[in-house]
Length: 217
Length: 65
Image (cartoon, rainbow over all chains, first blue to last red; front, side, top):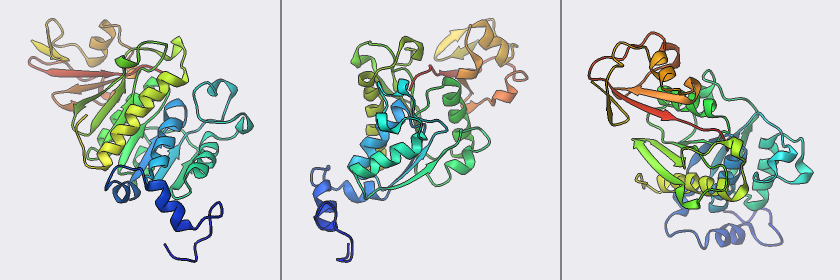
C-alpha cells in the first residue's frame, strides 16, 4: 500500500484497509484476499452471499445475472428502490463497492447455459450457485461437474416459506459439492429475507471455510 | 437389485432414466442423476438403461433463491 493511494472518507487508504480487517478471523485476510469466487445469480441468495464475501474481503468476485431489479425482489434481495430496473449485477456492484472498496468485482449480464459455463467459470476458484430456477441449478451442477470437477461448487436449494430456521443445513454429498437449504420448500410458498439469508449465510460460510482450507461441513 | 439414494429398489432394471424418473413423478429438468458415481447427461436420459447392481443417486432441486 503506497502513500500515493487516494484517501477514503478522509482517512488514509492503508488505515481503512487495515481497520476493516481488524475483526476478521486470525490469519484469514491474506487467503480471503487471494480468492476468486464466481456467483451465478444475483437475487436473494446471490446478493446476500456477495455482501457477506465482500465484507470479509474476498479479493475477487464475479457476479452473473441476466435480470433487472423489480419491486417484488425487494423483500429479500439487497437492492434499493432507487435501483429499480437496473441490471442486478450493476446495482449489486454499486452497493458492494460502498461496503468495501478493496474487492475487485466483475459483472456479466447474461443467462448461464450449459454452453457458456466453461467460459464463465474459467477464472473461479470456487463456483457459487445462487439461482432461483431449479432447472438452472440442476444444469449448473451437471455442467460444472463436466467442465470443472476439481472446483468446489456451493449450491442452495429450499429456503422458502416460514419454516424453522433449523431445517436449513449444509450437505456434502460428494467431494467438491456442497448443498445448503432444507431441500424441500418451494419458491411458490413465498420467499422472504430472513430465511433466504439463512441459506445465503450457509453458502457464504461454506465458501469462506473452503477458502481458509476447511473442506468439511 | 438397484440402489437408489441408498435404498434398495426392484422392478426398475431395463427402464430408461426418463422412464424411471417419470414413474417416480420426479420433474426431470430439476434433477441430476448420478449412476455409479458419474453424472448421466440429460441428453442421455432416454437412452441410458438402469442395469442390475446400479447405484443411482438423485440430486433434486426446488425453486427459490
